[in-house]
Image (cartoon, rainbow, N blue to C red):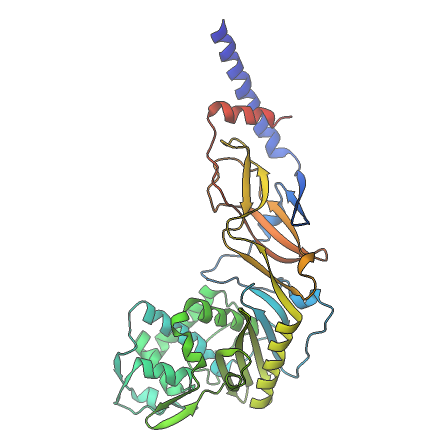
Length: 429
């Protein structure tokens, strides 16, 4: 008799599970609220907007921004600067946030800022040991004849890759740039193809390169948004070679040339990156500074003179540092919220971020940031550590300041058969 009752109970549970499945698939989203450090956390189940908001994936080590990405200055009462240039952007590297910008997606000529992509590919070749700094190469006639700013290499003479790098980065030598392209790819044309492939992989969707130097070409254009992506890759992906961008001068062939980035000499924390100038592009400068452990990038294009691009860049950097601050809103591996998990060995799962999350906010509003979590669906075991189950939004004044993936910080194993069936039954009520 007891066996029959057990069998009957199992049948009931199984049927309940099927009914629960149908019920679960068609029920309306549920909400819950809790508090994290005084901030309201709203958990939304089965929220379709969370999945729809996910950006397309690209091969990138950084967060790629777009026209919908929040701009921190929009949350501030302090008006941004209004320099008389084509476009600009100020970007916080620690938080991966845009502090302020004007015309971020306007297509512009980058001039020698193009050399940052050339440098990125050369650094990658060095990291992959396809070339080496002490490797000697013979100067080609094509590289030697390249016009514009020069390192003054001589045709058929030997020069090291390390010297060519300094000639390109410190002296902005077009001859050195073409020679490096030939060393890495065998020819300049093949190298240009690699530049454009890398731009797409980085998520630089409004960029095209026609040559490795940035000399005027209808095939070469970009935006300050895309330049911010490129600058971040240089800083984050290639720290071993970043020191070249702060090198004050370089002497080759008995000719000493100073780094064209005048901000390096002002003792304001600037340690890179690159200048550019053509008649079409105007005077351009991507500069980056570190103050109190915080790195900020400014991008200026279309200034009227060297003096203007330097003064505008310093003004933008000062504005970004002085009027905005960073706050850590999620610590690595520590839960932002505990949530109900179904069919698991435990009934609660910790959700948060596996890496620290920092937000940039207007000064004085550091403690006003609220945390809102959204789930992609019901949390059903097994759940693996690091598994993305939704998103976490950091909200200021009722508007989303930043959004990050919401992940499982501690794995939850699946329960046994009885435990799973019991949870299915409970879910009906």
